[in-house]
Image 1 (spheres, rainbow, N blue to C red):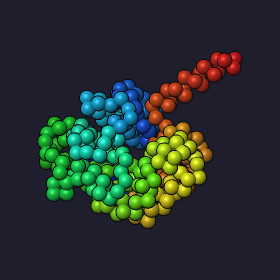
Image 2 (tube, rainbow, N blue to C red):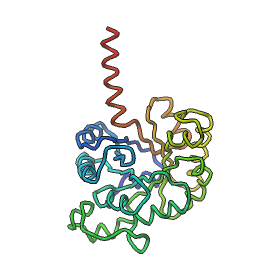
Image 3 (cartoon, one colour):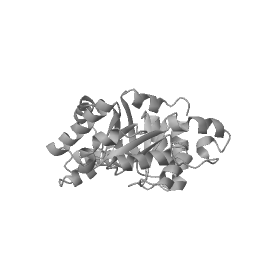
Image 4 (cartoon, one colour):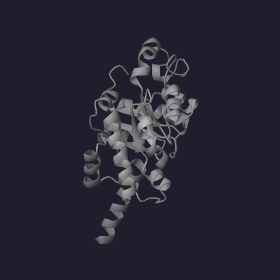
Length: 255
């Protein structure tokens, strides 16, 4: 917590890369963390994660010396509080479209007087052993990242980034494509233009710009970095598993 490399990196605009987890089992996490990803995200919005899974997710990530993040299921006090209490050092909040919604997420993640997070012994502060130290440093150490997933959010990006307490944004490519009426067309010029607008705004306000590249390759990763996206989620556990299986079967069929 006191030496949160992830928070320092995103505040300094450094390139950092991780991956996405949709299956709520710590074995997946161990495998991905040991592969070398710097951070991993537990996807509580679309993945198979419940509260009971998050504690084990955070344990597995931390044991590998990596950073546990959680995409909460919604922008509400209890999901954000639970993720942090169970050991996440950063939250990713979906479907944020306005400054008011950013402020709501920040308040849920911060202790008073900056927010409304409740005080308690929990896994995040080592079940109370590190209570005082955790409380003293949590507001500065916890990362709050909001997801830009709609045309409305892109249009409001300046006010979103100027809201106190937000550390950066994450592009949600598929939801964004849906909001523009071109579902799944993440390479469409409209989506590329929207992403570029977000990256430029992040640079202007000194906030980190993140993107989830579901099907990463050298071309789209290089393009994202050149655009200014330095917080990169590469693939996800379900995609890695499916692609690995397909490649093995294709090899047998070709033989």
